[in-house]
Length: 427
Figure 1 (cartoon, helix red, strand yellow):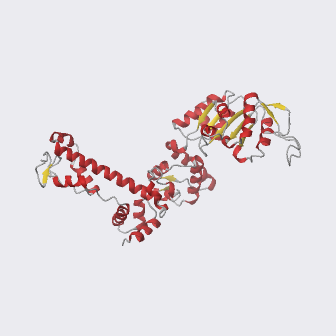
Figure 2 (cartoon, rainbow, N blue to C red):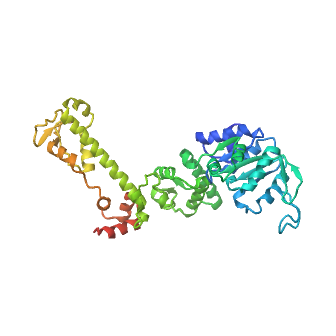
Figure 3 (spheres, rainbow, N blue to C red):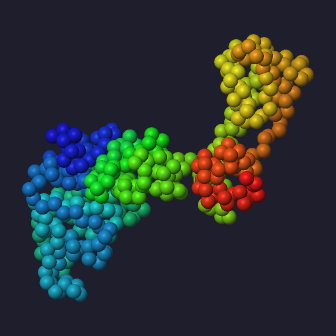
């Protein structure tokens, strides 16, 4: 059976290499009786992989059961898995078979295996190595033929190193490891999954399926989805019910995304955790990155011109910079660059303005004294000043319309209103 047939059968959407590799591994190991450890974050679909392995194995006509080890209390998990005898503990009014006994000949899927208590781990290890188990409160050894597929959203090797998981059990479980990729690691599959979900919900709620604009699609693909496919499905359902637009715009999509994650791909700096303004961490991350990039570009320009001043032979290399790019950078960084004549080289002896290499018919001049001045004087990088400056520019750009200015700045209108009050900005 090829991968596409398996995807169709089990409702798997996506074509990313990481997903295909995980599926291919599951298909290959299914025909064996090897123990499998499925690793992946919560919500990636680990249980589906266990069902695929069981359905393609020789045990497919025998029982399959999924057990969440983290959902069973520590005091009863041994009884659930291995059974108990009458009177073994308070409340044990009758003998009871455990999962390893009732699923004999089939497959048991132990989800969240990292949450299993240490005592239960020892019992499980014995089952894996010898096929033997003992009911709670009994001394009789029983045999079982069960294939174990385990899953975890933790790094079990780290747990083992910290003494929270048995190393021998870890190596026994991970005979064949399968790592299911997180949704953010297969971004190309996000629009496909979203489309599938909104079509399903449209059929359920008797509505037309919502479509994404190109900008909205890009935003959706950049969102980190900490809840993976499960979170994307919930988002699609929420949009299907609440959205009033047939084609979802970027601005409309942002209403449904948690604000704290919308700029998650930017660097986090220590300064952004100011206890006085914790809610503005993402804004400051944007500003810090912007100013850092600006300063880096200005520094590179300074170095380039100073090298030309010191060594005129480098002028030919500098010719690749066009007049338009120089003017753009000068305006963008507000660093006081002056026009310069094309095809000429500055002389260190020139006191005021000197022709410098360039292109086009119009002269471009640079102030030679300013170059040396800029080497020793740093532009202001005060975060509050720059933040105020950007807000003023955004308001001017959008003619005082707060909603548009806030969208351009990447902040909420409520946050913009607060900033206007904080910086005493008149609209």
